[in-house]
Every structure is written in structure tokens, then in C-alpha cells.
Image (tube, rainbow, N blue to C red; front, side):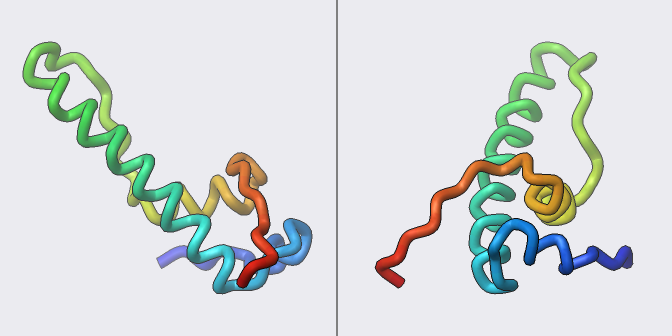
Length: 75
């Protein structure tokens, strides 16, 4: 299992718990896109499906700053 550098969360201004919530929401979006691609694969078998774990992709996207999020002060 690969280790993710959580020091990058400090640069984003997030703590671990906020990062998990944001990454899980992004992982759900990625999973729905993957499921839609799998359905289209029946019609067109040449569609490429990413075989990486969705949770790792979501966390890496978050650490690279590719996910847009807003912070709610109501928590």
C-alpha cells in the first residue's frame, strides 16, 4: 500500500477529516463516471476503463489541488 504525504493538506488549509469528506465526495463522482463508462462499454468494447483504485485517485487529485471545494463555516 502506497503512503500518501498528508503534509500537502496543510498547504490546502485542510485537516485530515475535511480531506476525507472532500475526497469521498470526489470518489463518488469518479465512481459514477466509471459505471457510466462500463454501461457504454457494452455498445463499444474499445472504451478504456481506468483500473486504479478510485479512493487513491481521489486523494491524489485532492493533494494535487485538482478538486475545487469551498469551506463552510457552519460546522
